[in-house]
Amino acid sequence: MATQLLFDLLGPEVEDAEEETFLLFSQEIPSQNLGFVDARASSLDLTVAGKDYVIHQSPAVLSSNRAGGTTGAVLWKVTPMFADWIASPGNILWKTGVLASTSAVIELGCGISGLTGMALAQRVSRYVLTDQPYVSKWVDANLAENAANLSASGPVATRRRGKAAAATTAPAGNRVAFAPLDWELDEVTPRLTGSAAVASFDAVVACDCIYNDALIRPLVQTCVDVCKLRTRAAAGAEGEDEEEGLIINPKSPRFASSHSSSAIRKSSRAGSRSSTGTSVHGGCPSSHLSDALRANAGFVIHVGILRTKPLESHY
Image 1 (cartoon, rainbow, N blue to C red):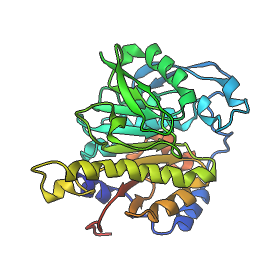
Image 2: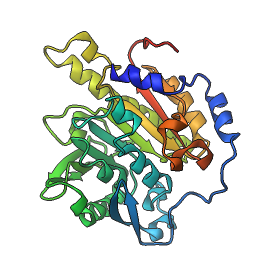
Image 3: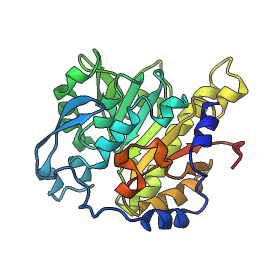
């Protein structure tokens, strides 16, 4: 089982969120600013997974008083590092078969760049970027700017506030879509996939997207709701055996989140108290991370799985 193989390579499950946070923040890490790549630049030139990207961003929106937050208006340092790591063929998620070319992935709080989705564009079957609607202008611009790095068909999205958002396909681009999604207001439904042939997601990515404590529970609940799409899809599919219908099967939903703030503690605690139970595993061992993402660089990657019954494990 791909999931069990992944757990064999990861650290033990996080049982105490306070202890996990203490261990992370007691490590010596380099002094850093807030974590922007360059908050004053309107565009950035980056190389991720061997490809060159131009990323448009908005310093003006970042410094504005926009209600609902502005942190997604510029690119954060962890995103290029995370995108480079997760797109690598030697990544632990690919080596264990947890991610595959048939995978559908959703990102929560993607910000303006769309960078992780573009880096994975030719490695997964579908990648849906989600965030508040104000970032869509820049996401669309970045997908268009970097179209040469994408394959032939592309996605955009429409939105109806308070209703399920849906990703749709645009004339050019790749299997990368943007769908506005408000964790507090919008409903999570299969329409988010943007494809009638895809009813759920295999993975949920959340990269450095929590700084407001009030949004922790909505984020965790959105992760749970996205994961439950897999459970409902399996339950409604004829001919599925018991293992394929479980939340812990080789195609089960899981979320990888990278944080550089104390929200780790509250996020882990909220996840463990979710109605179905979330197994959150500690930071990936250094041997499975790039140099840029190892613990002494000031970042951590947590991998979790939402499950409906206890996981058989040697931990």
